[in-house]
Length: 613
Image 1 (cartoon, rainbow, N blue to C red):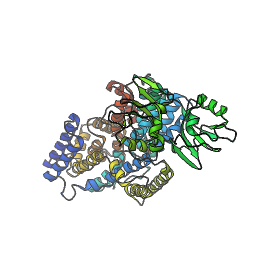
Image 2: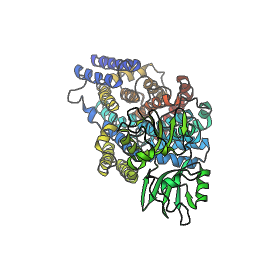
Image 3: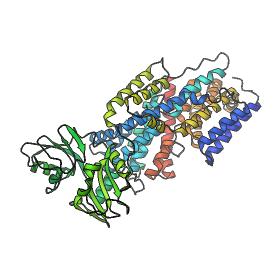
Image 4: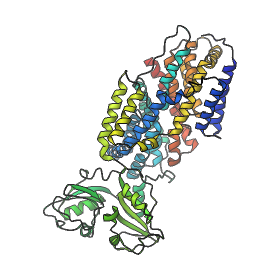
């Protein structure tokens, strides 16, 4: 490569725009996506990018792949897949914290290989909260290992995170500016980085198992509470505790012929929240519903209480929800609080009068009145303004009840329709899209969009929900900055910087050391600007640096794409920004734990890339 390139006006303009982008991202006076749009406009006005190519970033494979993964993630979320996973993790962990941390982080890391990292973190936040409330493990001890595994697992495939999705487009774009005689850069296949991702994920799990775990906060000071951590809250505030069990009514049971209301009034009866009779399972059955031989009751309470009730009334107990699994899926139903406002029509009436279960699908569990909790015969208590009512219901029923303005719901809950019955269909469609992505004949964007089309047709997700699932800030940020990378390459600015960098390095500097320096530089760059911006600006530079040093351009570019996500210390990594508030992490805490992990990440990534390339 010619290291004596003349610094042209176009180069100066491009480098000036890069500097402007860094400064604006660093001080955050203007939103990052607005800054990216301004940069795009300046590229067009200055003529650094041709007008007919300026907006091609919006239709690029990278942006389409990002959009598709967002919609696919939302579709899987609608089925409650990860809430099922939380239950599986609890059973496999068998009460051991170290095993729970290892299992949860490992599975989350694998999930992040096929979904965008922020989307996986958003889905796992309620899972972590539920695990925390069920086990008593402080939320800060769960979230950072989980976030690190998600970031590391994103390197398992080419669609796990935004930098890797961008990489193929940047490699293809770089071909038009390669020097004469240089080999054409080929796009990487779907699972090309798989060995690297496995090594990174293993390094993260080992780090927290043997070292990082000792640095995590031992107790929860309350700053880590999230709206999803409802189970421990309701247990403490209302004495509503325990798991859900199925009780099958035998021919010898005295409950045969009783109404559900009469069964609930029995001594030491658990909460009876569901009933399956005549093949129909439903939550919040009406109090006058009759119980017959073969009926199945969904009972919630401490295991000993439910077991004693089953034994005394000749009921078969099962802890596996064969009949009510979908109904009690936390993504579909749960416990909530609602206040009775002064304008409510409920004032002066009781639960029996209102027929809350029959008319609204709400099971009234308790009433909080003047700091006193009423649990006995709550359906006979006349309601007053200001009463806090505790319900168990399907979320959609709660949403409809709240629309009447007679109740003001104060618990955060899923407002959209949940479709756990579509779980198998969604997983099958997702599997097909992954198999298509493995094909070398189809771009990843087409394979992923095939999955999106399948989920829309099958009703896993509706089109309006798909539009809402797209994070347009991410889309604009990526699409607007992509031309900046093109300009870095086509103007010769990347080649100029690379040439002058090689000139200033000691003669005979090994290629692996250059790769480590490129990785560290990209990591530092990502602390200042977004991981997307760091990838777009640094990949052309790394390719030209590899050509000047006699290295492999694809290997250098891949190290950049991997290192752009190597940030466990600041909120410029979107995954870390999502957990900082809920877990109450301080900046010092993140640097103390995340700093060593970032160094390990760089060493493992460079070593694995050299083994493969």
